Length: 160
Image (tube, rainbow, N blue to C red; front, side, top):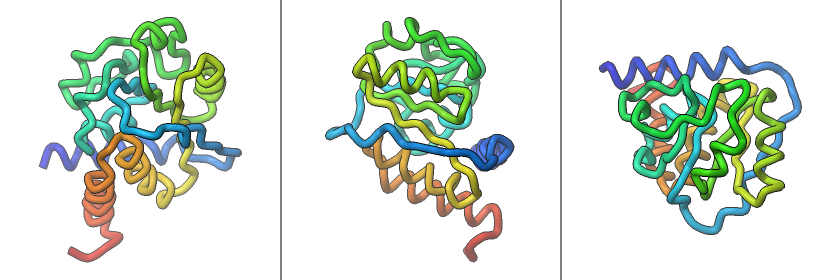
């Protein structure tokens, strides 16, 4: 029950950041599931752990405190201004960035040769699809589909 509340909170947080804007995805160059992931958003961190990719996460922002295991990961700075050098020191296979505040760091990481998945969902459907996308790029596609279905049921979007 508590896990469901955290997932619902993550969805609502993502929705708060949703607004019309140009989005692009920079993460299509991975040919294998990443072993070292840095998450630059608390909501993304929650999704990573929910789909079973928590062991792959090596770095998170100072604000990533859920689930409790996220607190044990290396810190890379704040959501609005992650520290590029701290991220690079972790040698990530993949960095997941979120929203327009992180587009510059996403582009800088990409120029340094780091694979980046930049997410900026602008609707509830896109938020839900991002669960599947995160699952897919981390090697946990089925878990991403499961998470989407669970959240849809909790929001009353599909029948049980």
